[in-house]
Image (cartoon, rainbow, N blue to C red; front, side, top):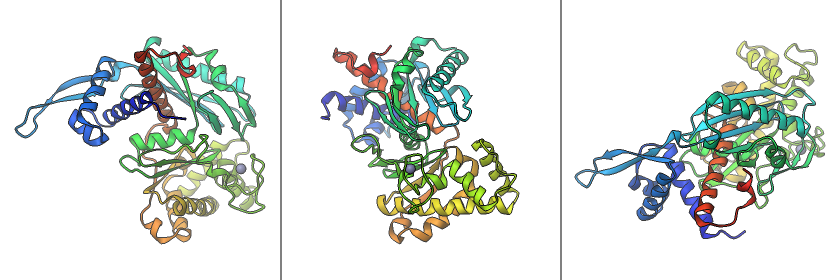
Length: 411
Ligand SMILES: [Zn+2]
């Protein structure tokens, strides 16, 4: 696809707004320095964002004897964004103001087997209705809803092409959601959402090359090169969870054997536990969250089985992450999502040791491995930024009087 001048204008506007959201208040001069855009371009873009009510002027700062510089900040009440994290075991929805502060949150648990598209859509619709009501925002102020769903997605058509853990094939998810949700909808997956959340607010801020390892029921790697997301040619880069770790190993939902995910995703960790200690009370069959939480408590209490399971898991994870380090030479590897959050520092320490055993010295020396520092759900946050990007793209189109594109005509 060719990048048009409109795409570039949207991208520049998004970049300027992103800088302001990450650090407010700021001056046009600082924005030009941070984005590499000319001061004139920044001034134009800031003017447009002020006209849209997304920014506000907040005074002046002295500039060492020169003319005082006008400061702008994000206008937090200038709109609301919704981020949806559809995971295998839950749906979480958060409503954000324009500064990306969480104003409301709703959680829906999904029981095992409750994964038909119509059931998932029902949970999302309920939770979206709930956050809008809780936050008391008028519907007209909701600029969009970013939806993250596991697996391969086609952003342009809104189709969830393949979700191996649910055996979803070509589910027209955005069309199904649009029957219940009247706001503009934008679809992507958790790898992209977590990576963008880290780039804006987390451990990858100010670092161009980052790998965000997503550890949940499914597993994958969000990739950022040169400060931007790397999507690959068909938006499926980072499917590291389905790379082969063990030849002829465990059967994966994707049909392959020995995928990384089958050893370090939540069900894989449960199997690591079962193989080590088949009757362990740490094991809660059919309940991934309860088992991972029990392991975390077990490690804190120095339970030898729990310690060994986390160590075994970290060995698999370390070998897989060392591949990413050798292949991509990132500045930072971030462990994200709910399994990483639950197992925390003990997992991180074991992973660091395991990676050091497998990775080459030079890329290893340049890489820091950290836990995600984002205190809220990074997937919701990242998904909300997709809605923001979509909203900026649609205002560019409106101001250009171009025909509506499908992604934003759904209102
Ligand atoms: Zn697989």
